[in-house]
Figure 1 (spheres, rainbow, N blue to C red):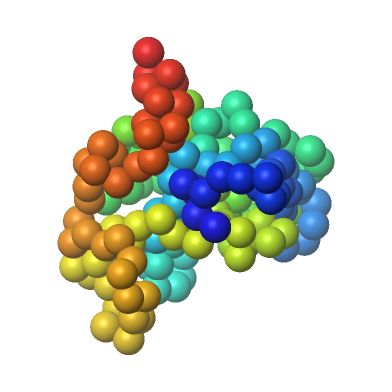
Figure 2: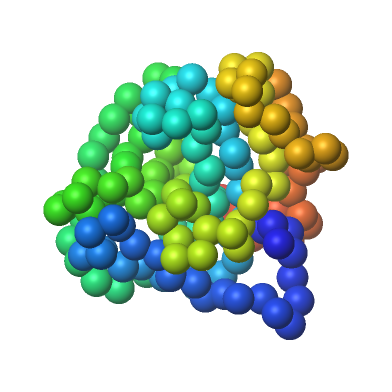
Amino acid sequence: MSASGTGASDPFPVEGGCSCRAVRYRMATRPLFVHCCHCRWCQRESGSAFALNAMIEADRVELLAGEIERLRIPSASGKGQTVVRCTRCCIALWSHYAGSGEAVAFVRVGTLDDPDLLPPDIHIFTMSKQPWVPLPPGAAAVREYYRRSEYWPVESVERFKALKG
């Protein structure tokens, strides 16, 4: 079930953590939206074909255990991002991009205990997608980026507006 899913079987809150298990965190609610980003920058940063990020209000991500560090690194936009990592194993747990600031966390879905809960709502920057990565039939996909109003569920748009206003 994607970020737009709701219902009595909603598994949230959910937990995740780093590889060495020193850091544990909890996502209190379903995220706003889940991006599967195929840009070259995400490919380089993740060491894989794409990055899978769940966008959520930062105050809904709770550090349960361990120590984290915040590293400022460059981004394709030129505005940079802050990556939150475990101080022991250095696994990236979430990021804060300049466009949304510290208000929104981009949680690395692969660090969740059950990453199957959050498949992508949209594939972005597919213009640089690896040719051997097929997209599921009917999946929302855009060559570059998109307008929230065209893809996000109404509830997520309202939550995001509340952050900004």
